[in-house]
Image (spheres, rainbow, N blue to C red):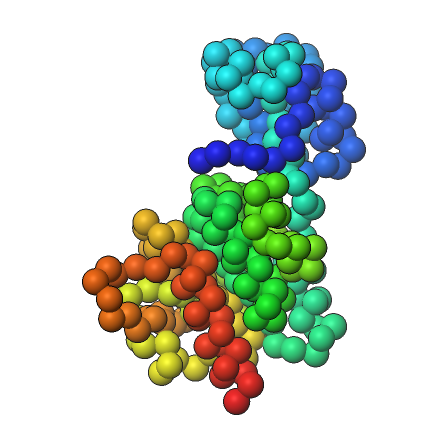
Amino acid sequence: MRYEEFTIEGRNAVLEAFRSGKTIDRLFVLDGCQDGPIKSITREARKGDTIITFVKKERLDQISETGKHQGVIAYAAAYEYAEVDDILNAAKEKGEPPFIILLDSIEDPHNLGAIIRTANQAGAHGIIIPKRRAVGLTATVAKTSAGAINYTPVAKVTNLATTMEELKEKGLWFVCADMDGETMYKVNLKGPIGLVIGSEGEGVGRLIKEKCDYVAKIPMFGNIDSLNASVAMGILSYEIVRQRMN
């Protein structure tokens, strides 16, 4: 996975970034270094549940843009993340049942950018992504979204399955895309809904799939058995739009 977020290097700069409240997606720290400043940085990182990776000096030198990393490099999101409640409030303000896109292990920034763009056009109120095994709001994501990132909130959560359970308590139900499901035209996609899309290679994970109320299949008649994740999301999103309009 390639990281393209805004890079922050150097102990003072990284520590100040955390203390100022900047969203840090990932932290690379020199393996074995446990002096005072590094301990302060990792302590701040754990407060925000930032992913911390301990690496050799050669790895830090490789990813450093300045050559003056001082044993620590942070990747900050190109755009600020929303909260899940922000997405629910967006639906409430519009007087609409929530329509949320949940992404399981989407690691390609072009896919995420395209999904944000389509979500905006389809009237989705927001997108939820996991903190691990997923691309964040990088510069490439922003560019691919063609500006939609400024209008469609994206929330990042520690545990996607737990978030789904919490949303179920608030009245949402969930459908995921999978070839083992029922044809999407036969599934009731009205009401407050979360659409779950998995990665192209592995699809929706087993645990996440078990949390879904329905599994929907996109009819396909070609020689291959899969679609690009952003294309699958677009097809199912507009089936939701069609059913809501009817």
